[in-house]
Image (cartoon, rainbow, N blue to C red; front, side, top):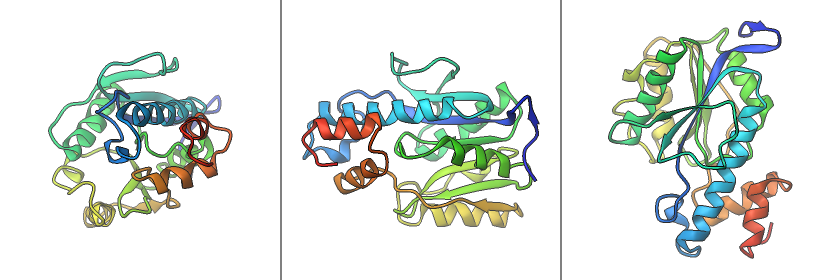
Length: 220
């Protein structure tokens, strides 16, 4: 069963949670071998690719939950909300809560570290919320790259240890223990290391991200 559509638009919305791509604030695990400026440039390219992919999804709403200030990399059509909360678990929960307050609709959330994501995959995730309470996208490092919730509940996220090899497993278990029906998407690689960066760039050779990596002298 698919989410309701009107004039080709999916009755659902997408959140991108991101940091402003400033040196020293993003992709710090890539420093070294990259400089803070190079890491920020790579993060900006990943964010631009992600936002432009989201812009192509026929969703009813698009939200950027941002830590920082928007820049010229932000395409039109996004509502910007400020991140709030302490740890990442709280900020994810708040992004769902604030977005749902603006538009009570099924909601899919992704980050800025999977520039290989496609509009078709995101549209599928929204569609799955028509017949499931949640959609879960596992990441290859044990985390998750996507979470979709038909009715967001902060309690599902707050307290989940983030950035650990068991983060995804813990969150998935919480969803199921809450009695939710969960659809699982394919696993994707989050960019955390230079090896990840090279692997992901190879999947999207025509992207801003791949061009930015190649511009640093890293083979595609």
